[in-house]
Image 1 (cartoon, rainbow, N blue to C red):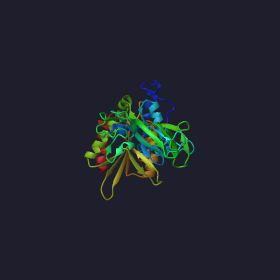
Image 2: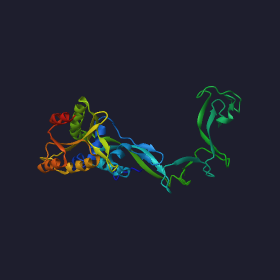
Image 3: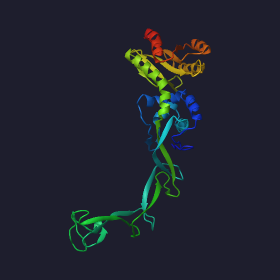
Image 4: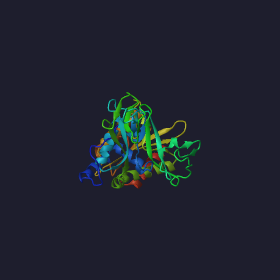
Length: 340
């Protein structure tokens, strides 16, 4: 998978990015991804090399469910000032088939063969004789071919004067080989001039975005702690497979019981306006319709709109209205512990 950026991002971001960032921080995928940073699971997102596909980001793929959209997802977060990038590696791709299964070959500049032998040049300091190391070797000792004196100590009796190569095909010698790339998939040789080189990045959370995202995370972390203290097994974010075999992501899933384990799913929705609109209710219903949990909760920060409440009642979704983490925990305490 290739990861290139439409523009390089510096420390300074356009002012409009703060608006974009506020909208992105409401996105379910963004919240699940940032929770990995906020919860301490990762401090920096580094790519993982796959011999077949090249560099990938498995954590992001699992969240958004489609590896082909990972590049756009990470680019969008960078452009909004949520993530900052660090050059991690550069990958060579075959100019013919696009494979990353490339072998780097050092070749003879005369006949282009890669059947070359690399040797070290040695200079005997006392008599000034210089030759490849193999010609100095006699058993385990280094003996000068010119004066027959033994060379015992590096940088005193002798010094290494560089590298010398010999082509086993044409027998010519040279100091600097030429570099070619051999594709193990389509068997094509290419040079530096032909090479397709792509940059690969590691990503970290910008401090400004961390502070903004932490507001929602604090609420989720407080709820998780409360549930765990009361005997629930909690996953956050949680991925549950539905009847359609599709995986659905929830901010949290709480499990109780042993033989007949019950599952409660919880999503968090916040609004900078007076109330959370009905869209998060609709989105949660679509997921629970496929997953069929024992109960579902939507935590609305600071409160849920009247239309949202009516829809939640129709869809059998429990609404929890709270202005902060303490109110959210208290409200869940009254409802969830009674169901346990």
